[in-house]
Structures are given as structure tokens and as C-alpha cells.
Length: 229
Image 1: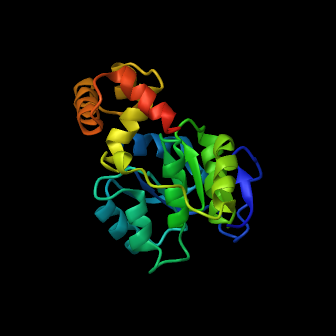
Image 2: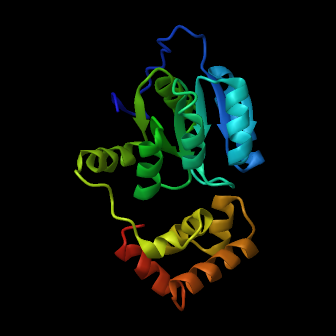
């Protein structure tokens, strides 16, 4: 995997010689993409955006960026599907995952798929710009709290076991599940995921039905037992 760097390393020299890395931002929330552009400022050259898997694959193939800033959960199959479709044709392009999720299976999944780093959406603009430069330059960069279990997972002889019950849930349902299990109110979940409270309620009802649970307290115990929180 190369050198693993903490995202708070402030050395931001782009050794390839380019003034700034060329970046495509892939996230299904237009407002969030605009916010990232604003936070990054002139630190990178944002050459394109996409909001789902198919448009991401097209945009990346057309723009050939140095780096793709990739959300893990996307319409059309998620960040892993983007990696699967792009990297065989364009192995020179670097991918840095940027997600609200800090769950082990999400991090390990995209790193196994070829991403060179993973940072969460609590990151500051300065830290994100630094992470982009480092990954574009060949380093592996992770938010500090994620680096340990990433290294543990990749030093293990076997991949993490699959959970058939968890596999029943969509990516968005998993996001809602983790936040509810952490004690977030519906309004807080909605704000965190940029969705409506009613949509949160719909996802929670779907999760309870699929897992055959009765209430959010049982849901929290279920998630805790599987170390999802």
C-alpha cells in the first residue's frame, strides 16, 4: 500500500512537479460538492464533478484527473463500483475516499478496491487539500482514527467475515443505522446525511423490518454487537 500518512501531516509538496493536482469530485449531494470546492480554493484544480456511478465513470474517463475524491455511498453501486470500472482502464488515477462513514467494512472495502486513502467528512478544508496532494503524489492517507484498523485488517490473513443480515441493507440504510445506533436524533441524522427527517424515518422503518427488530433500542444493541458503532 505504500507509505501510510496521517491526514494531519502538513507537508504538501506535490513531488510530480504539477502546480496543483487535477481533481474530480464524486458525491451525490450537489451542495456538498460545492462546499468542497469552496473549502479547497486554489489548493487543487477541480476539473469535474459527478453525482452517481455512471456519470462518475464518464467524467473520470473524459477528464483523466490526477485524483478522484470519491464518496463511498453513491447511486448506482457505490464508490467500490466506480473503482471497479475505472482502475483497470486508468490505473494511474489515484482515489481518495471522502465519506460520512467511518465503519470498518466501508473503509476496508474501498481500500481493497484500490483507493489510496480514506478521510471522513469532519475533515477541515486545509487537511483535505493536504490529503489530496499526498495521495496524488503516491502516499496512502487516512484520518488518524482509521489508520490503525486499516493496517490491522491488511496485516490479517483473512478478510473480515461477511454478515448476511447487514448485506440486506442498502448503503444509505447502513449510514442511518450507524447514526441512530450512536444516539443521533432523527433531525440530527437528517442534517448529517443531507436528507429529510421523513426520509430518515422511512430508512429506519426499512432497517427494522429487514432485521426483524422492534425499535431503535434493539437496533442499537444489534449494531453494537457487530461493532458498527
